[in-house]
Length: 297
Image (cartoon, rainbow, N blue to C red):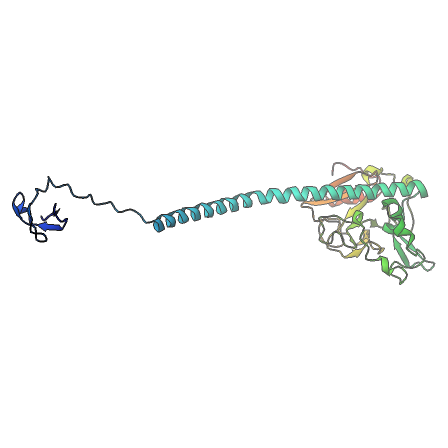
């Protein structure tokens, strides 16, 4: 094994075979006599252990940082996925409560109208020839803080007459559920059910005394879905066309609330009615004077 050493006179580095250890001889550079050291006696410079370059260290740091970021994003995504249903449920609960408040305002307006005129408003008004003019929603405007709008409407002309056209696109927040896709537009998703025995028999107004089954057992206003009906238009649900089911189609009550719809009763209370309700019970709730007992709904 070669022995590496430096000349003590000139510093020249030299390598000789280990068989010459301990012997003397002239330095090949300066010619001065030098003695070859034994391997154990020679204390050369220690060989430095290889170290990672700063670029390698930086690479490691970047990789660790990226792993941490990816992990954070992944965990965050999982948390969002877990929380999303809860957030959506909370939002729907808030929308359902707002809808409930709107229906309460409509029911209260109905009763205030009754206090003034001694009847609920008719489903619609008609001209001398029996043609529909205006909806009950138009007649309620003064009772939902829309007196100024009401005063601009020509009640002797149809709702869509040129004299009233400039008012058709006015949105009435009270007449719409915020869960509806058409919320904040001029469309309504609150309707009454029109037909014999209901609280709304066409253009004939009905009084509280006519609700012989009890106001708490008789539906006043319901939600509908999938209809584009301007609030001014005298269009509502027809009892004759109903299938006596909830969320079964455009001819029946329904809503965008999961599992059913909300209805304002004759006493002003608002109830959530399940879409699994028995058809006979639903009919009993709609008819005001059939004498049928109404249980839980």
